[in-house]
Image (cartoon, rainbow, N blue to C red; front, side):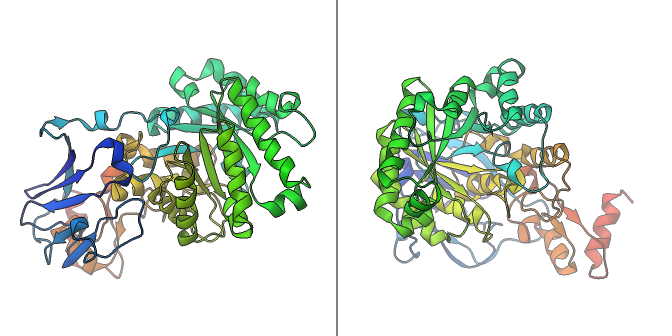
Length: 465
């Protein structure tokens, strides 16, 4: 068994015990309080449910093994009160470094299942560039790809559609000599299934994917029956053949292939059987990941949960992914929900850039999964860099950063109310869900007519008076 031990600065420890790696994705996690001291994260009485992956949410009384007993209030009066992560202990009690536990996950080894394990797939340089007023040169694409690889440590970097425009074709050509081997190994070229009435090997945009030199390609395929018959005007059988032929051809060349199942959630609600047939065609042809797309951004978290679980259970040998849009403001929630339901890969963009109202924001998804859900991710050690990556991308794209952005915004940990600031003088986590340093951000105390004495005193101390 594996135990994660957390120690509170100044005392207080609790351990998280999980089942072996083989069952990590579906294991019950039991958290046992070792110390009598309270968690600063939960200064209230009661119990917190620890969710068992693969099941619906339950109450503390229903599953006593999945409960954390918390004391009635966090101890107050000790500045700098926070939790720190010590590392991972194996069954023999020896401490293993976090880097060892968070070694790179491989999608080629079989199904990666969330929330225990999650791959991070960045599509800022492809889907993100479809946002209004977002434009990026080939030079800047190379700079951002390097930063996503070296600083964030993203598993996959979808850098463009080489069959659709000269700039993206230029990027993949230059990447072969201008990116380091690690960054090149993470590149993904985007495209679509072959056109109807033509063989995959004869389709020019399929050829562009192969010629890109990217080790991974992601092709979009229709999975909504109405989209098939009325938008691309193919028969249901033709569409399935397009998926099968395209994936089979690419995998026969040794290219790792993912399939973006466009409009999947809407398609499932329209005709669930056909949507699953599209998944089956891709899986049978050798796709390594079935990416479920909320293309129009209208799905709710409970719908995402139900449908993702169905696909994960139906295809136990293939990783399931999530691609969410933010038209209802649900993209981050839907992405985290999909991971909780078993999706082992999450797509998104830095700062949520993208068409219409944007894509799912990796700057919220990644720290939420890493710090609150406890997912194992390759980039978890790089979380302190995520604020700098966010601001680098905004600066490179000539965008004004959103100050209220969760985790990475300048106001994410800014405090104005006197009551709040006074409480934070006793414990900084009284009004913060995490230590800002965990994501490379910082706490700020603001001065206004709402300020109390502690706001002023804090500022005086800050300037050394």
